[in-house]
Amino acid sequence: MSRRTLLTYGVAAISVVAFTLFIGWWRVDGPGAPEPAAQRPLPLTQMDFQMTDQGGATVGPASLLGNPSMVFFGFTYCPDVCPTTLSDISGWLDDLGDDVADMNVVFITVDPERDSVAAMAEYVSYFHPAIQGWSGTLEETERAAAGFRASYAKVATEGDDYTMNHTASVFLFDAEGQFASTIDYHEPREFAVPKIRRVLARAEEETS
Amino acid sequence: MRYSTALALAFSMLVGLPTASVAGSEDIVVEDAWSRASIGINRPGAAYMTLRNTGTDTVTLLGLETPLAMMPDIHETKTDANGVSSMGPVGEITIPAGESVALEPGGMHAMLMRLQTKMVEGETFPLTLTFADGGTLTVDVPILGIAARGPEG
Image (cartoon, rainbow over all chains, first blue to last red; front, side):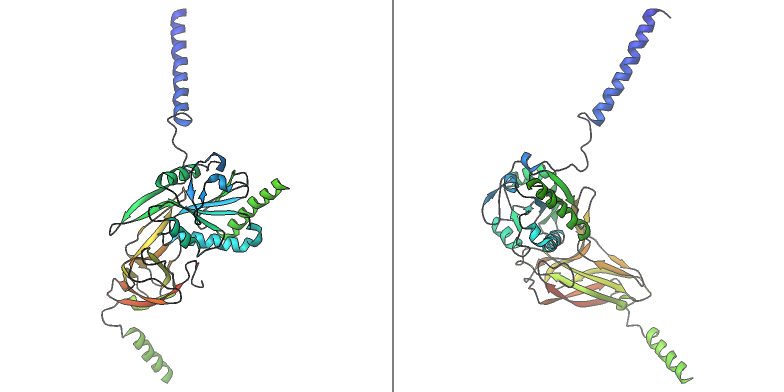
């Protein structure tokens, strides 16, 4: 075999390896990679959205910094998951008592077309007094959900009505706004309350 | 002798006298029915209960009726691997002999669409279950607070 032929084969072999590696990178880490199924929420400090709370005040992710936070998405026309989540959270807060006095607990509506500030104010008034209700424009709602990596979609039902599919997890953040953990919908109290305690303990360590 | 006659009579009363054309649904017992109060009438309500089949035949629940809501239907909440919850009609519910089916938060529920009146805490409303064998069963469902978590409140 001549030197030239050997060189040609060598170049061809290296090209194949390089091409294979490139395809691998493209599909795993590159632009061709599938979106991770469930991404972690961004730190609150990297989120950017503006909403109105149940008292009419302008609020956003920065309003939550300084204390640990618990944030979840829902809508008040939701007959099952949302009242159950709000009741569960009310129960956790009752269990934790004074320990959670400074915690931000925020319910963000994914259905601002029906959930006005007044509607949110009335709805949250039936649950634990620490629970805030935030609503924003459709655009701000999208920005908020994107930051939390939450998803939601309007689904038509019988009789010109609609319901919302939405992420039902509860997101926990520390006082610096770093994402701490998620409490999944219907997680038993035995798991949920200790998770909240851990975030609270972390906040205390940081301040002491 | 007298004892066994009585027993035979009791047995014939139990087995030999089925109600009209109904087969099975008379053995359904509804337990722990409850619902949450509503805010006005625009939002759909939800009711929960356990359906226990005490008989020997499989019973199929076809639908619901109530003067409280124009469109009552059994719905189910499902949560996928990404934590996204969705809700949709279930269709028929089969209750095997000797078993129970629970309508409970986060699972199946009686979805009360198009409320005709507000659901007021402390009141009750009648809910009629319609079965495949033609039988019906009406239960009075207590209305608890909006933040209720179960039949005990």
